[in-house]
Amino acid sequence: MSTARLVPVERAFFEQPVVALARALLGALLVRRIGGAQLVGRIVETEAYGGEGIDPSAHSFRGPTPRCEVMFGPAGRAYVYTTHQGRCCLNVTATGDGGGKAVLLRALEPWHGAERMHAHRIEGLADGPTRARLLARGGRDPQLASGPSRLCQCLAVDRALNGVALTDPRSALFIAAPPRGVADVSALWTPRIGLNPGSASFGWRWRALDGGSPAVSGPRRPAGAGPAPQPRQCPAPRGRRAGTR
Image (cartoon, rainbow, N blue to C red):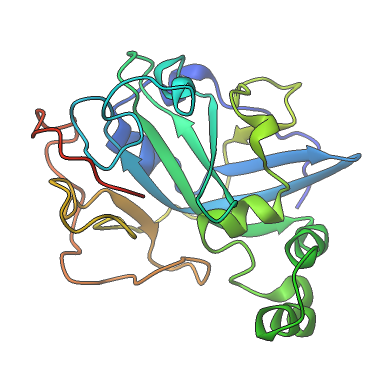
């Protein structure tokens, strides 16, 4: 695939309801410029997070903090956070309404630069089954960037990229539309993965995935799977019991 003409989508693309954005991001291209190289992956799995006072599973549920401040800014920014295990996860800010809404990017299909992505994944891995499997498959592993932390490892995304504009053609990280002629995604919706079962938003079907992709990070049709959530706007606030993700 030629990557010479990839350009970022405009900010208006991100200024839509967070659940609609989670669907719209499927099939889009995540582009990372690093060390003179351009790494490109096709987004195949996302999760919507509904923001302050609405979604108890969102980091932003209780309002802005130093960690999640970016979520309350303009749409189309990268929100990069670190898990308790020290791994990074990449989100895209949505709507731009100051409500703290964002979409987590959960999985990519490598399209360009798979060997470089593979090298990033195995860098720092101790000897063990995971490293052995990655070395055996090289850049041909369909699960290379399957999962939010693996995605960040493959593209060398860390907290230094927190807040960058994904609409800026000069950015080291941006999102581009797929080339013409690429087949449309057959989207499935399931509950989100890894949330606190006690959260009021635990069962919301806000995980969107490409049902035909081998790179999806979790079950394609678990209990509760179904068509797109309705309504497409965030529901009304449902209390302030915090969840986790």
